[in-house]
Image (cartoon, rainbow, N blue to C red; front, side, top):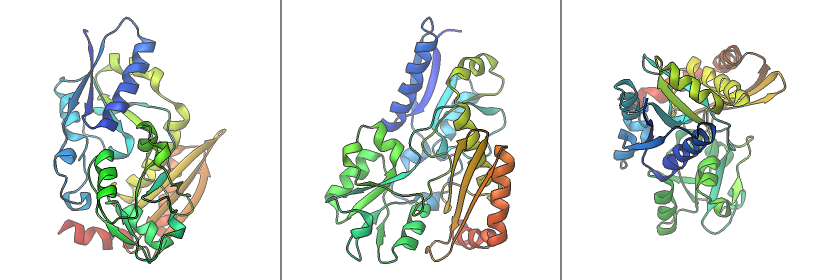
Length: 308
C-alpha cells in the first residue's frame, strides 16, 4: 500500500478535523505517507435551502462514502453528527476520536447573553433542534435561517440585524474562535445534537489493514457515549434535522444519557435521563421512555410537512 488517502469535505472546519487525524496518524506511523483528498458534498453545494427541506440522509457524507466504496480514498473523516445512524452497506466507523466540548454556544453581536436579549431579538440558526429549545426557553425570540460554513455565518451576523448566532462549541474552538463565544448554552436549556463534538473516521468494511491502523485513534469513553446517543436516535428514526437532542457521559462503568424530543414551536419538550452500562441498550431504553411520553406523535407531526 502506498500513501494512505484521507477523504474530507473541503470546508475549513472539515479540513481542520482531517488534518488533526492526519497528524495523529503521522505520529503513530512516521514511516507512512498520509494525504488529504478534499471533496465537495451535496450539503456544501446547496446553501440557499434550509437543511430540513432537502433531507439529511448523507447530505454531508455521501460523496465521501462513494469514494470509500470505489477505493478512491482509504478512510473518510466526518463530524459524527453528520453521519446517519445507518451506514451504507459495506461501510463502518473504525474510530471515534476523543470528543471535544459537545455543547452549543451563543455568539452575540454585542456581547449580550441569551437571557438578557431584548424581546423580538433575531437569532441565526437553521437547526430545528436549536430553534425548538430556544423557543421553549424564550418564546419572544425570532429566528433567521442561517446556512454556510462558520466563516460565512459569522460574516452574515455582522452584516445583518441578527442579535447573535448559535453554533456547535467544538467547531468554534477548533477554528480558534473562543474569544467570540458569549456563552456556553447550558444543557438545561439546550441539549446538543447526537454525536456533536466527536470526529468519526469511516472505512470500507473489508479494509482490515486500515481498521487496524485507525484503532489507536479510537477513544473508548467517547465511543460508548456516542453509541448510546446514536441508539436513541436510531430508535426514534430521527435525522439531524429533527428536534432530537442527546448527551451521554461516561462515569466509570456507567453511562449517563440525557435525551430530548421537542415540538417545532418548543411548546412541548419531552426529556429523559437514564444510566446504564450497555450503550445500545441504554439508548433504546431512553428512546422508549420518550416514546411513552408521546415522542412519536411529535415526530410524526414534524415529518409530515417536511416530507411534502
